[in-house]
Image (cartoon, rainbow, N blue to C red; front, side, top):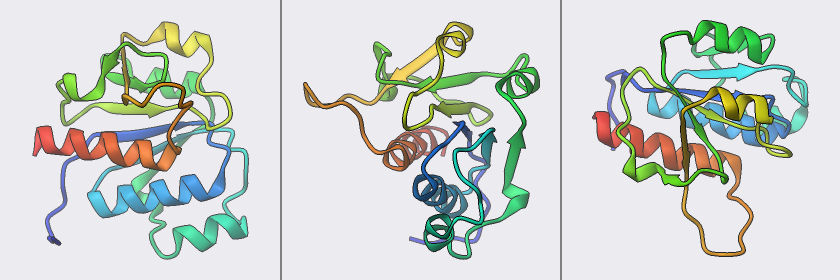
Length: 155
């Protein structure tokens, strides 16, 4: 199903992403679903990387991507705003959470998640349930799952 209306969607934030193909796929997902992407630097790759360009194709719209020089800059911009961390360390399942249209949904870097200081800053932490003894889903898959649920809830 396609539509021309811009969806007012939660923001997706990536904490120091380090795999270019995942970030490119997330840019495409955000572009197609009307979400703004926020990237907390440093990234573990350059946006000129061939692997990144191959996946992002023509979906790169810098007007829909906001870059932060650091986590400190990101969190300063989020004072009095809700940031939800998606993490395998959470107890609450993402489908049991009530998303709001102005939420920022934060995902950690592929190789290490987010540091403990970020965990301690955030009240809302959610997980995607998985079968026992599985470590994690691909980051771009996780973003798509949670973004789709948040859009379903806020319509």
